[in-house]
Length: 311
Image (cartoon, rainbow, N blue to C red; front, side, top):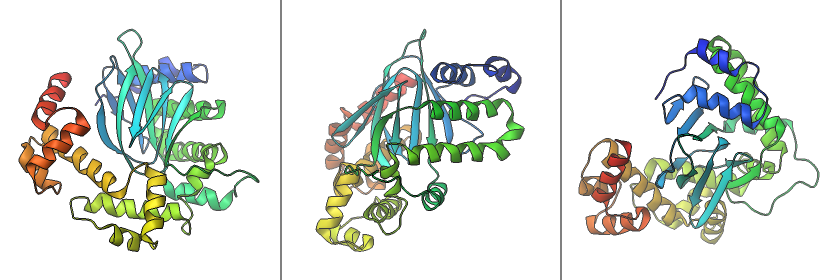
């Protein structure tokens, strides 16, 4: 993780053109030699890579992901989403994803940002601003790629400008973030976001079940219990869960388990058998088979590769 020097940042970012070029320059300066920078703005992180990356798995919270330079792929279930500097990725629910940087080089590094969506603020905006007449969407999948408007670029540029004036972040960052959420809500992905903010809708019920799953993914799960928790029939729950996540509940749980096991082996140095039991597997051999199918190599071989890449 890098650090920000406000005096240096202000010299570079002041007077930049609004838009993608300005965004890229600011991320370039602020990340310096860091691959990831968690900023003082709540939920906002900046990313820099100077080479394409191997697929990496993690849980992606409801977020908007923007690129200033480069190209990235995010895979959810069997669906792949590719976006670049003219598009953004929006997720409305927590999802186990596999992502990789497609375009990056030392001369033209990948420069991007991720900002988590505050669902409480989003819910307030839903109440204050009803959906535009005729605006609806038949697609309920909790992830999408959209074109980026000038309004969004302008708001994110102003948000990054605050990083060179940290004394203003507490007062002004929430206002700019609220503007960003408003722009998203009133844009083409508004229906996707509204379905998870209204408590009476199926999307909201699935989201609440996913939150429970995140806390109990290592336990044995029955689809009937999940459906009951969501207040839906088994068939309705299965349908809405798959429509929003592109996975069945069991596939979703498996991906969470394997991603967490990978993290345990990489960061806490657990061996494969211990990691398997920690995330709920009873059979190390089954764990190894499923891990290999997801990550392309057996557990310890995959971890050695990741360590070598980060060295």
